[in-house]
Image 1 (spheres, rainbow, N blue to C red):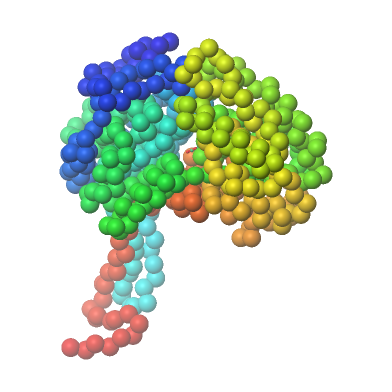
Image 2 (spheres, protein in one colour):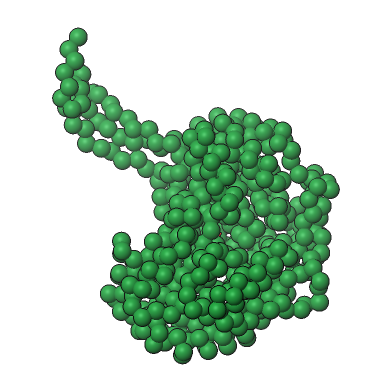
Length: 503
Ligand code: UN1
């Protein structure tokens, strides 16, 4: 199935988007998928203006009605799951089941947001004054800027957009320049949902509620600069996140940052090694090592390392690397040449630091401009600088520990703090790992890997990961503003803290 068939199945007409500023390529074979126009800063500003006008209307639509639009969108996604999943495979290089899984994640967050649309609760608080009542009200915030990365080209937008819409916020989305087509497809599918919704709710959805802005960093900068954008949710590199945060902080606007991960797993002496082998392989080599939550550091107890390592090396050597559209493939391509070069550089650095590398070589699939690799396992003598940095490729560094204190120090001894896990059947170790003195990450798992989080939990992490939380739990609060209301139903005017001010 070629790109045109997939776009036809999604009813995407690219003519309005065509141009010669940006080439969309498939990492599968390096082929050009389309050439597109990009937005100028003036174009983005125009989109922000129309999103802001949409906000003034959308904020007054009752939240459950906003939720109904998201429900219809979830159904449109269900109908187009196969085609959109295929487009993710073609444009981002994910294997079929992961491409489909990503669309499932979009459907799941839509369901979550629909339920949420009737649960945007505030608290009722006891007032210290007689005849007074206190409560909280959550109100829509304004235009939400979304900056997303190539590795989750559709789901991360959906996490933000589904919540933003029920919270009463329009969205202007800058997708990765490496995955513009999936973004255009999402916009088209969303517009289809709007058309469907309008059959029962005419005249409710304002133009400009959802807009995509294709372009480079100037588009992201325009979002971060605009006073009409009170919140920017950005996923990507630490460098990008710091720039966005600095621009936002100059005008004291909000951010949700989901940046680097350098996720570790501790394998304790009591661990079930059959589960460990499967969990490590999925977490470290799935998505060709290109998830924020990819497992990059394995911290193994000395008593099990010599049993575990050969089993992992065998698994890494046997996973099928190749065409992501083929059913048996488990590892698709890296996104591009720069990513391949970055991986080889990291492996060279690891060797210099005394690492013993198994795997990591390029796999020839007959396309010069496609970069497939055999996942690498690197036994390191210590956690050197290369291990402390995030290399977005399938490299698993293995470190050995003797005491859990030592394992935790290694685990927390990196600048990033996204996801973590421990494999143990010892309840003390598990609880310690999850305690205040344990893992310093935003995601802390026991007996499952670091990647593949469900949408129901808050997703995000600490330190250089940026501190933001997206998706489930109470992440919605970032997309709304809170008003604290104090209501006096008495005939007196008592002041708080017993202050007297008689006039
Ligand atoms: C990301 O890599 O940016 O937990 C998001 C996971 C996915 C989301 C990853 N649900 O792996």
